[in-house]
Amino acid sequence: MTPITEVEGRRLALSNLEKVLYPSTGFTKGEVLHYYATVAEVLLPHLRDRPVSFLRYPNGPEGQVFFTKNVPPGTPDWVTTAEVPRSEGPARMVLVQDLASLIWAANLVTEFHTHQWLVDAPGEADRLVFDLDPGTPATIVECCEVALWLRERLAADGIEAYPKTAGSKGLHLLAAVRGASSDQVSEYARQLAVEAERAMPRLVVHRMTRSLRPGKVFVDWSQNAARKTTATPYTLRARAEPLVSAPVTWAEVEECGTPTQLAFQAPDVAPRVQDHGDLLGPLFDADRAASLP
Image (cartoon, rainbow, N blue to C red; front, side, top):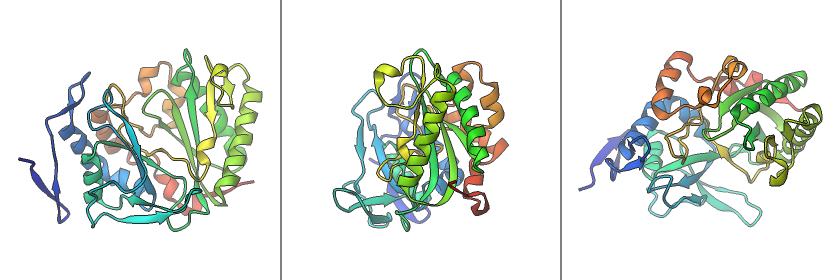
């Protein structure tokens, strides 16, 4: 029998809690749900008011993995949804606004991916993001070198960036921006990616062409497009181990000498939150949001 759990007054049927989703570590679905409940206080602000795309892996990362943007069948009527613009026509997507919605979505076994804009202002970007993706044999160590260059370049334009791991191989940089469309933010990010390649031609590539990427860091600026999404801070990833897209300090970026230094699994994250709070919390400070030059 599927156990029924009450979360903030909502009744949830949480299924297959003993199912092992990450065979390499034995991490179960119940532990996935516990992880999300534990980090909800810092995760929810990054989800709230942003249409969510789900990368689902109900049988673990080695099973079928599929992307869901529209409201999934069977979504409870108390889960908030919203109509959002798309080039092919408007669509209805989920908003994860509270703990009950978060646990409902986590029970689907999902990575959370969000846009760089809020549902009430889809025409204005409030986040700038760079996805630093290493091409083998480059690793997150090289990503950190590129991130430090980008931090200084962004600071020269009055933009403060904050790092998090991708939860896979690379690193993400985020900044709070205002007064610009997604197209404008994309173009600005593209220009900086080109500058980074000029400054570090042996290390950086700004084009997606895979043949150019071995041994270099692809500075992916394209995730600023209005239609694109990026892994939400604190989301678990569909990888062999229960890795998390975890915020990190700039000191950790500066000191990174091996890839394992910035590989954080679900059990690692709650103690980090206890020590640091939400390292991406400044993104919610309106006074820190920068206008593009």
